[in-house]
Length: 171
Image (cartoon, rainbow, N blue to C red; front, side, top):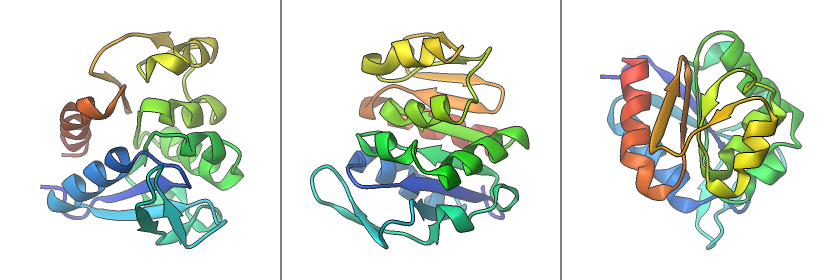
């Protein structure tokens, strides 16, 4: 289904375990080549409950043209991710090329800092809806929102719809 598709999933400490691993495994199962792109601070990042993920590539080594999509999982990792220029450049670069940019939960913080929300419709965890709106997006409280190449969701229970929307966008 997604053979020949390359996807970056961002990682930093305190990621939400389901929001990283569910898309990672689901998209790999669909045939995509999924790479974990870390901040460069460590080779292994741990979820909020200590579950490790090994980095395949550092953000400052990642090139937007090498990826068809980038996924930003939530948890509190996005608060660190949004301070990493390489991660912001990757998200902005994939968006500029029209590749799929997907975020769930607090992942929208990275979209805010990458300046890709102006004039778009998006969702996120309700705790940061004001940040999303202040970045110029129309916030809606829906399971998954698709606005062109931008795909956003709110919480872990939205993951099935989130992953299905990513698969459909890349198929």
